[in-house]
Image 1 (cartoon, rainbow, N blue to C red):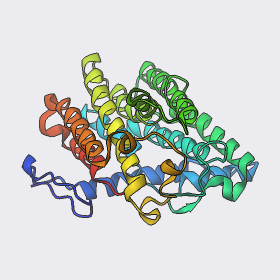
Image 2 (image 1 turned 180 degrees about the horizontal axis):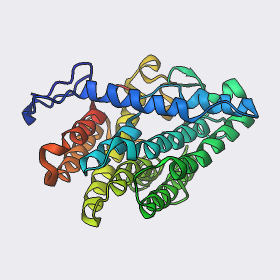
Image 3 (image 1 turned 90 degrees about the vertical axis):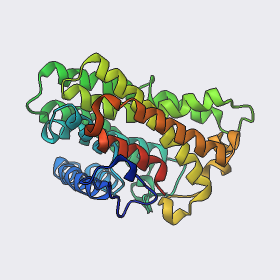
Image 4 (image 1 turned 30 degrees about the horizontal axis):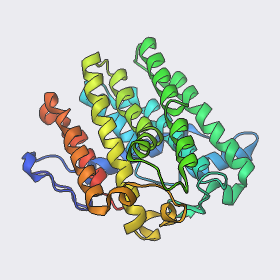
Length: 312
């Protein structure tokens, strides 16, 4: 039996695994990640930008991206220690994307994770620079802090991550997202491009970078990349659904923003029920990619199910 006490609507009992508790797993790895993040960024000169960086980096959250990196590295025989710098760098980059996404020129939000957004506390100018600081520091952190990993693997991780957050990934998805606001003729193909780039590319990097660090073969990386692409798209579909169905308290940010901004979403194009079915199908496709690892992949399977069960 798989127990998931504290994790809403996640039923994994059919796997027959007696010693895996998803809630405990998430809490344990989140604690490890947050301790490393806290120690990674100390206040220096000029203090304002460091305070701004720490404000958002340590504001909480599920830490799903670094946990995916750690879980994948362990699946392939690596260790938490060798993957932790990359895992934390992924969270730094994710935090940068949230800071910038909340700016008035982008999605213009006042709250994130139940707290005032960075620009509401420090101003637009410092928020932009704090995001820039986190982005550049993420790559430095990987290069300087990764231990017991061959240099060529570290270089491959840096290259993969750089591509994922650039114009071919996160940045490109954000551009198309902004350009599509208010347009009545956005197609499902365009929406999928936005989601797979703006959200999916970084999630895919979390998994693949963990695999690279552990010495995965090309075949293993391809399977894990497909797994991650599917859960990345499912993640964003659930975000679209929650924007309609969840309260601001549950989300930790303003609800109904997508409708107000006249954004194309999966619910707006397919309806809520069909959107949920699409997310469930993507998770099933993702889990099928993990078959070669059997029970060793239980943490990744559980994390995939958690994506569609989450309430924020």
